[in-house]
Image (cartoon, rainbow, N blue to C red; front, side, top):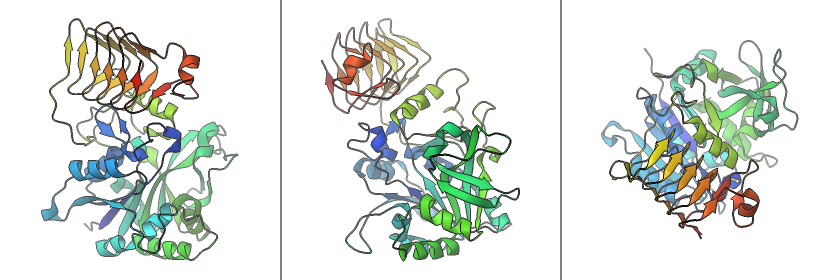
Length: 404
């Protein structure tokens, strides 16, 4: 059976302004999430689990921690020609950085030429989901499309944040509109829209031609969703892949088809709530399709002096010392002191929560110190005077902050 040669390109240069202060000194795909992981680990796990072992990660904005994470965590077998390599912007075509997602690939065409691949899978780096990309690639090859766009049904009220897709019964895309203010409804389901997940599979020759055309177009914004895909839609070369048809080993009925765009602080917070409970909306404990990363060399989590935990994920090296933690996700090396209450929180690595402190409905970035007796989330209006608060009232404490 013919096995296509596949090159993976992950677009990881996003600035992530809506996730500030979590992106104050790191790229959006490098933001820690889910206790042990970073956002980029989800797309890389999907590609590697599917057998795609040649992957370039294009980085740009504040990429040091992202580059370091990829270099130390994602080591495949060089003997077998496998690699995951971070590629920073290099100004190969002149004194300018990437001017859009399409320009990022155009400036890196030497990588595409060198791979000699049949198809190129261009995936985003800031979504949380499980997917077998090879099923999408198989449909792409069977259809003869130039590009195949992964699509998913979302509530119409939220669809203006995405590229919206209208397709015929064969899957050929008839219309693609990037982030329309009035998203089109789905026939028979007017309260939903079909949107792009930001994942594309290209026939390599079609991608090369499209990028050259785009580079020569002075009116282009050089964006994959805003320029490249609409051009191929107009040429009749674009098809859609329905993400709900994708099946992944070990998926449960509850988490099948789960996908979340982690584009805002509230979406980031809600993602973590989706990980909790005995039957979570997204199951991190699917050993048949694992989310891969490199874990720090830390001892197991420890609960001492009557420490109490309910419906939580606790990272390695964390110590709950007489405090109470509920409905929360704690990353590695977190300490919760005696009498402290942590309720409905996302706590990133290295945080220290002092004796008697109360923290509710909050996101604490790395190395935050909450002094004994301090309170966060009790009075969102008061918190807003000193810290970032989300539209839904989540208090966000920036990296390394001391809460007195």
